[in-house]
Image (cartoon, rainbow, N blue to C red; front, side, top):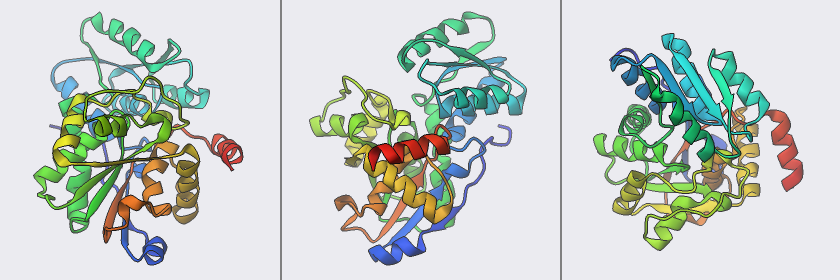
Length: 309
């Protein structure tokens, strides 16, 4: 396969936070990917695979980071790309996607409707639907984050990862398996109004939410991928959720410490260490996967801070 579309991202040791908590806290800075989030790892790999299979047109439904990653892949490889976004997608995100040369189509009030429309577009010859999170190749691409971490640090006591649809989480589990991180625990992070993984694990059933009620739009899958649920059950994953306000505050503290603005979805994972949650009390070394996200402008962030302060 040709050279990967993602880049190796830095691993930061959080000196001040580590001193405060008397723990070793690491940040894997996937917010430094070319599209601002981890999505290019898995989505990029699937796009490259599709080109090798002879496809000449990428189609995806995503109001956010997966759509941006697909547009970037199309731009890098010279492949026609169509991104279907729901009406709720902010104009600045549509502009970002279009700037990479993708055709942006607006359809439906929510992602599910946009997704049905996107799938109807692939009936044309040599067009392929790119799944945002639920595909083995996407998980394999996302697993590269742990390959990198294994070169950058010893295995930690735990990895904290935000879960929306579960594509990043599946990649983390697969990456840990192939790098023999067998003694490392996995902690999943969500917001209270988008806690589909937490609900499924509490009920020990592959079930979802009736609705999403959170500003963390990138966590907005009502149900995680079935593979994510199976991995979580087998690994005995610990799932927690925080309020939108806690996620936002973690974003604020992270911005102050590192100069990086990330989405509230990512703030859910950062909240484990910035709010010193119960789930980390027994741990010494903690790796937080900073998944990033390009769907939040500084103006919107400031509006949220005022709203939730």
